[in-house]
Length: 184
Image 1 (cartoon, rainbow, N blue to C red):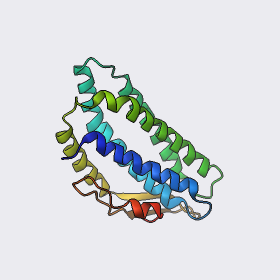
Image 2: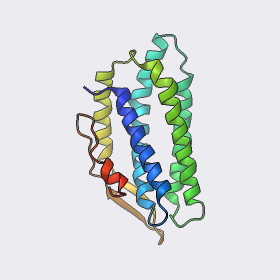
Image 3: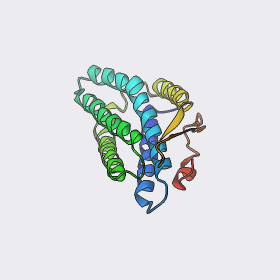
Image 4: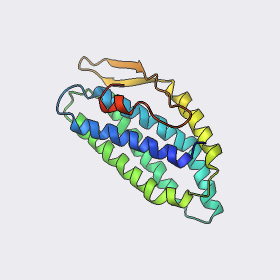
């Protein structure tokens, strides 16, 4: 049975690998990595905001824990959404494209540290992880059916493609090898 917190940790690892791959690229077309990363973040954010955070808030309220961590996480999502929207409007050749993606990566990495270091430990043992995990997987699969919208190319046109990537029910990700190689 899927554990909600472990599912989120897997998502965190996936985006950290994408950030690392972007950093290691010396040349070439970074649009694919940016588009894949933004799509993964969009799905992860939706699942957290629609399913995980409401359950987490309820669990923390029932255990008399502070819910400020959830409010902060929601605001961090807001910042990421703003940066993602700006990146989608940019071309890979734009002067600050790499810098904006780097700031996005730093913001997301900070968010991950907060969740994994502070929020998740407070929630472990206080959530209905199995049921919550099932709901999260179902929502994630539905969201993954949407096409990936690539940032603008050099000619100003947006490229769109479908990911076709579905996580299997066991929670294992077979796409990591392809992502590391820059193909998706």
